[in-house]
Length: 76
Image 1 (cartoon, rainbow, N blue to C red):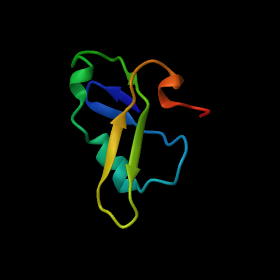
Image 2 (cartoon, rainbow, N blue to C red):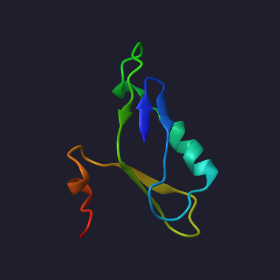
Image 3 (tube, helix red, strand yellow):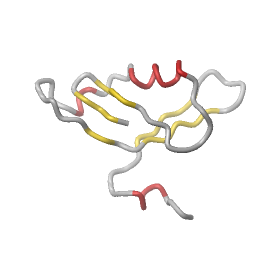
């Protein structure tokens, strides 16, 4: 996830099932712009995991802790 001063600006799926466009649009509308100062052109890159259950209309988006790929237990 790429986060700028106006909130998430880019969301890229790395693995897992396809995510519906409306879900990606909802993620882009999250109000987390406080992470980047308003006047800044900087972007923060954060890993996140989105999970949902079949037949449900909601899900969970979890920003992964900073600290590298080890935080995601890759390769376990």
